[in-house]
Image (tube, rainbow, N blue to C red; front, side):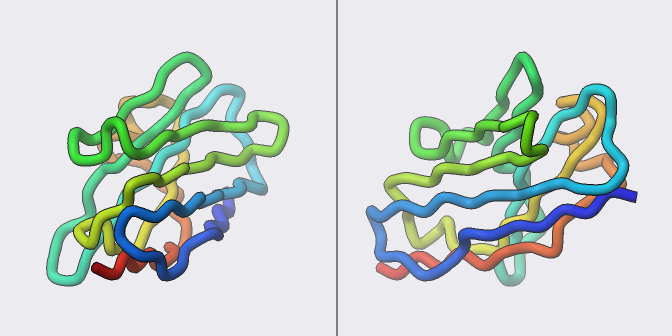
Length: 121
């Protein structure tokens, strides 16, 4: 089993910044990718960003504003969110999988419990 714990969510004004963290513990993969999804009220969960040891991937809606990074020594992934917009308001979930492709597609077994991000206008 793998446990994922997110932190760093909160309330911020439009144009502001937040940094999310997600720490993994338990069973570890020999190589892995980690990523972020979000779900706004009444909408489906959508991909935001992901990182593996060699690559990153971003949704078009966050390119240039969000930066994903990982710390292998800490089994932690970060999401630096700048220039936040009200439409970024959602519950943000992290996930982990063996490949970047699986993480981006969301076809993985392990998800965090989510952290709320609210951007006021």
